[in-house]
Picture 1 (cartoon, one colour):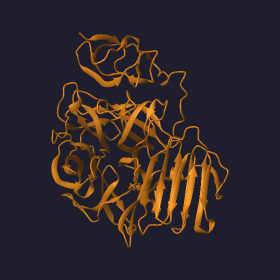
Picture 2: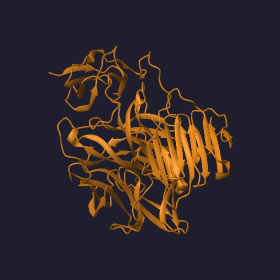
Picture 3: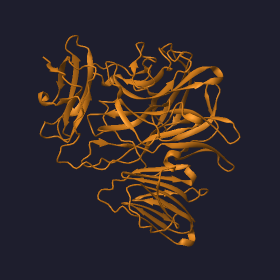
Length: 523
């Protein structure tokens, strides 16, 4: 028989002890047995925990909830309730410094960015979120939600969509239904649609994976799930990650979806819809090794010609044409992600409806856990994408930190040993490929070997392409380095936990070989 928990306040806090045995917690309404939420967690005790997870029960305050616990002995009676969130960490634990310019969730785990859109001056960032763990798990995923007006300072809101009988809420994309093709509009705001994968295998009563939709009628602040879900029924066992875009010449919408792994290859499919609710297959495409989290967007070259970009999770992409029936690549596979051992860039996605024709991308920066923190993982900086048509290389993409970051105030210097001390830096370096250099910032070290023509980070080496320049743009934050190579054609993003480290910056090189070196300590 399930226990009964009376929810007296908005927030229910669950003590998480990472070394404890995991248990599945299922909450249902006591009056009608309707499923409210479920999650898996390593649950501690009120006097022995690593951090307090927080469940937002704003829609259930004043109700009795049936509490079912599968596995493990849990003292749920002592879980604190309050109308304000309690501190995440025990009072005796020193809270580590968060990244200044890279989004992190307040508590718990994050990974893939999801459902990115811009509307009425606000950038919306959704993300795969497990509020009850600090490690990746396929048992808890909801869509976290944060907003910003400048892509740098974020306010985290309540999760936008949460698990239900159809499964967990896995990755997907967002779209503004400007034409009200769905018929869901109720006021001056166009319906804002979130397309996501309902990962039904992990529901309390397992069901197949499907593709589902949630929508907002208030400008993107709250969402409800579409009553006609799924919009695409079961396909393969774990078909996932829908990304939807509008195709103006045909006045219809296109969804690209990861279908399945075929050995080492990945199968994707394109679907078409005239109303965003009913979809039929356009094209299937099998690609080598590059799977998951597809993105599909347009960019215009310097001559004004429109090109379509098909990108996969690792930042690997092809550029080509889309005629409403299928994607025809015109380039070989290229990658924004430098082939470097520790590179943490993954699950990259672009913003829908970005202003002034901008193409803005962000990714998950896979990171080492930060000791004592109540959060795990971070996003990359938001990056501005551009389409280049090089005479020797053909079409390729470049990525650079967005203008909002470029314009941040700071203390600048061109000295090799500038005597600066800061938590975060923005650095520009252009040197000859005929001489070594060593760049040290905080606890990280980047080196170049002219003899081997390689950049070195720790034990990892990156062989520079013969036609690339040694022009670097580098961003260092409290928990990461991002190195933009060859004018932004490739990116290295690495986790760097700088605990009690030297906060200085310094370059060791022959001045005659350095075309320019500029460092800005961000204030």
